[in-house]
Length: 220
Image 1: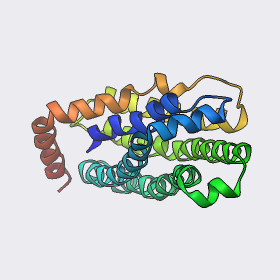
Image 2: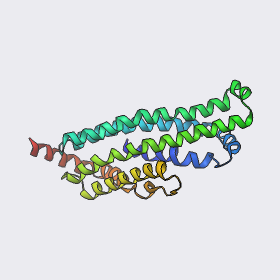
Image 3: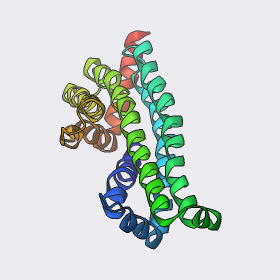
Image 4: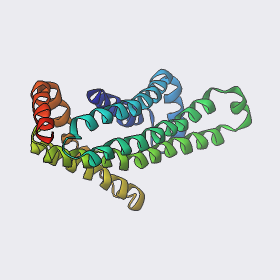
């Protein structure tokens, strides 16, 4: 489930905007969305699924890391439970774009210029929504990284990189809203922690499971 979030996230938040949105040209953007309507709809579905996967993944991480510190492990779940509904509601902005482009009543109600302006508005709101949930994409990694670092059954280096990944998301959130001309997406350079965690679990799951049982035994 954690692994699925990587392609889903890349598809919805990176590939689709770059493929369909033409900066400064609302007409071209509208034409691209109409020409690739299925891809645009697919991005909505994957974003919703990604939010659900995030919560389910957090529940398993809670179980995995609660022997280290139960309350900190609860924070992992708390932050994902906050981010999931925000992520889903944010997709209503993309749904609004489809309604404006596909519903006959809107096509007759607004002029072409007005319609394109509204489409740009909703697409911009969607990007703002992604940046808003970005703070929680980062925050759920902070307790996870700390608990991984403190555990004796997952390498500490992964915990360090998870906390660095968290920092990248938080910097992006801050610069997007306070310094809109900053121009650098820091999280594009700090993502290694999550990838390390995913592949460690994939290839070392038996090792993690045995050490997890040992840790629980030590606590008892």
